Image (cartoon, rainbow, N blue to C red):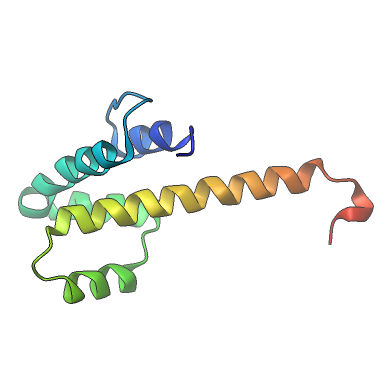
Length: 105
């Protein structure tokens, strides 16, 4: 697991998960943060998803295709996936910045 993932999730959700948490526990912890928002503060959930830039169409598709799956777990998966994508993009951008000018395209 990417060592930057937990700090990114902590910052995004305003929580304090330990940095050595296993992936399955991370998923459960994120879902536990999302679950009360689904029923209690949907606008805040939408704001978080918008800020993270979770793909709305993908979310709708997953929710429709998995009606018997806990929506909080599906949303947690998308949040974690998006955070990993952002970290990878940053890594690629930083690697590009370290290249010699003639290697950049």
